[in-house]
Image (cartoon, rainbow, N blue to C red; front, side, top):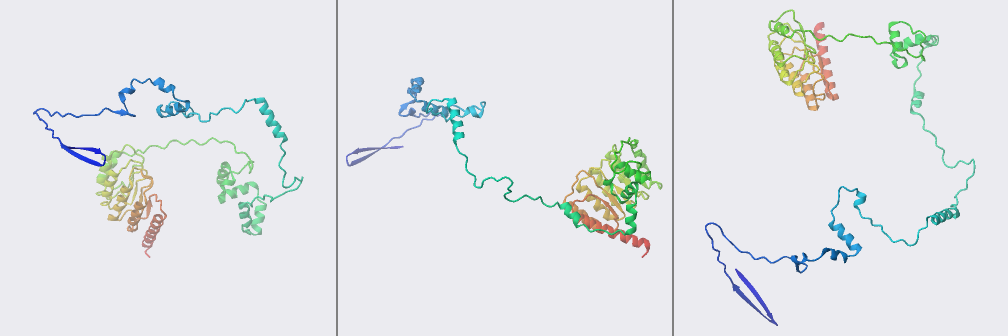
Length: 387
């Protein structure tokens, strides 16, 4: 370690370099070093000297402006106070003179009365209209009505309409589908040919008690028995309806789907609102790839995802015997463009599908599928007619 000392004497500068070495003694347990620190100072004085100064005496020497500045820097912002009380008032001014409210109001009123009005550029003349007069625009509906083409019905029809009674006109409106021109009772009376009575166009419809219909009976199909009949390939079981049976377990559905490939008589299978998921839908897709007798299948109102729907539509290309497939109102209301295009390509590759019940959002997919299904229907009709 080296230290440099410089001594200035006039124009002669002498530098003296002194080398000092320190030896550190180390022990087996610890190492001790000594450091030297200078006492902290504040404004040229030791900090300890400020402990003896009286703060009150210092504050008494400050002016009001200095105290306000010190308060802004020291006092914290109290978040519990409203904002208007946290801010210091900066508009304190000394009054320029004594305030007499009564004299001030009298002076304001006198000045308002004595101040003349500004002269008008054009004097007011009664009955004179200046500027442009606002004209409302022509009604668009009235213009459309004026542009309508008059249809000549012929003398015979005009005489019949002119001589028709009110009841006959109401019946004619019901036949033509003008439901907005009549109330509900008039519409039903015209359909049942009961006559309109004295109600007429401006009459008030009386309240009628609605018919009470019994609630729809639950589906009474025996799940266990129907599965056994499918497994036994019952020749009388052509249609199986499990619609609205909510307590069907996945095991029962898998048993049914395993029995479908070996069945040669079942043609219609309805599984609407039975709680089908992707797991059971994939099992059904495997069964459809092996079943050669199913013609119609209904899977509406279930919990099948778009991936499961694509898998089911793809399974129809193996046997190519299914004519109607319905799978709308599933868990996902929107399939997406990618899924709809994939379904469209699968349907266009199927020459036997005649009806498809899937909600599609995009016009391209709807148009292409409708065109292909119509082509399949026309081909089926030509084959049936032998042409």
